[in-house]
Length: 386
Ligand SMILES: [Fe+2]
Image (cartoon, rainbow, N blue to C red; front, top):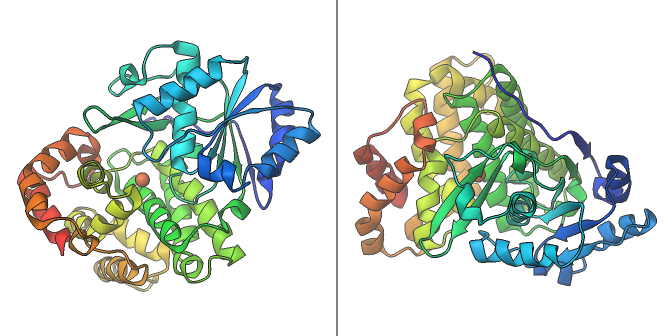
């Protein structure tokens, strides 16, 4: 099998890497950036470090601060209109996954035109848009290193996956200092999302030796640091580990895939407005238990990489420890079940069939080593309920 591997051309990783934005743009021959971010980051002054850096390089950016959580078609169009009001040669995506995903969509539309709805999979957008520099402020989505963006069609609530090299940032500045102010809840949800990227990329049918290396490295970096960063948000070494792990995990799934957990989480997000990281965490223990018997060796390796099993543990014992750890991890990081989260019991039950259909239609479950039937997906939703 030949694996196709795609990565950002340039990454700068470490404390204060984001203050090198000006020099990165100069290195890439770019000088007229549009910064795409959200209103919280601009209003709280979090863009200052970037602006100082650009100022030193004599670059004056414009800022579009209209990125929204779960970017919509309308929010992308607003960003595109803002871009067209001046002459830009590149886009900087600054923020959580939503800001970076917005920047990706705007960058492609700026060059290729049309509406983002016309770009959803199975269309593959390999031809590049405007050069994109990604600067994540959360340690989770890995969007800075992936060839995907997700935009919600607000008229149908459909989360449209858009894929291709056109969405891969040309450069990423990975600065864990930006994550020190992340609240506990966001730290846990984004961290569990990243851990899930690594686990799913590793067991996916599309896994390959390169993505395996990235996935295991992500698990090694994320697992020992999640509880630490949750307990003490200012723990710099835990933040550094999580940030690096999230980027490794992004590299892993961008070059392999996500699988059943992500496929099942999207409908929960769409129907019940549950943040993506939350929905993923709610499902991870039950779905992993469902999949584990099919790929025991893989999950045993994952357990060892995460440090929850040792080399002396046999594979079955290592997998049992992993399954136990995922349950305890959710408890320690205060992840609620859908029931505890406050989802209406009747609504949940009445939507199970629809959610199962939508999960399967997303294509992600087909990458799972054990592909569930619609009934099995409903059963998994029921298991995750309480
Ligand atoms: Fe994710």
